[in-house]
Length: 333
Image (cartoon, rainbow, N blue to C red):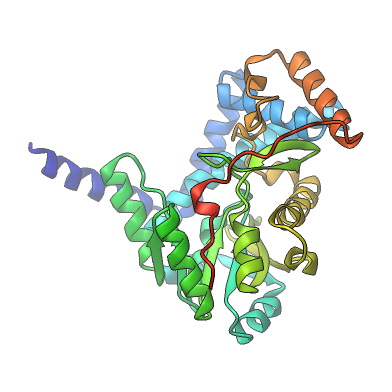
């Protein structure tokens, strides 16, 4: 079998599996999560457990363990749901969205024709929302190719069908997003990741971490409307979507100030529903002071975080800003 034939076969297999009922995806994820939580054999679960200790030290150990088990299950379910969403038609995906809270915020923002920036954290099952927004507006979205060519083709095809223009995660992609916003278009940005290069030190749960200011810079440069979005599964084999306006303070001050507004909204959401955040990402190593935090014992990692948090709060942390990553550079109008 040639490599091309093998890729075609794999692609067809991915399409077939992804078209199975989302209930089956959830069932498989629950079984896998039960195994991971019972045997405690996954390194990812250790990362989730540590991240919760670092972010929410005020919780009791019992409560944190309870959230850890729920977070592992919810994150696995989201990944399996993504697969089903990518393989389903837009109509099928729309049928899974049962309630939309704050829908009028979206329609009001779109009517202003100033461009729209949707801030979507790594929370719940965000992929389900694309089909709904695609009904009303074309979207220009940054896309980082999947390393496996067949998987990349599968994901790219799924996202492109929803009136989405996929652009690269570099300066050329930023320019295309800027142009789309100036023409009244829409973009989606996930803000809570570590930039590949540089970034600015912005507090996240009290710890200064390298952060991309792309979202804040786009909002401040274009004056586009900004909305905060998330989707959570419900008990009826579907999802409920939430649309919330960003604090108007995001348009004021520096890009760092704007990013703080975004992260304050994210922290509020996480504190409200900690079990639905994707805690597996090693976000807390994004600083010279915490670069080795995931290689320390839990006690050492927590002590380090407490020390840095106390110094930051006291205003004694001397952190020189790193150079800004390329995608965070927004061209002038």
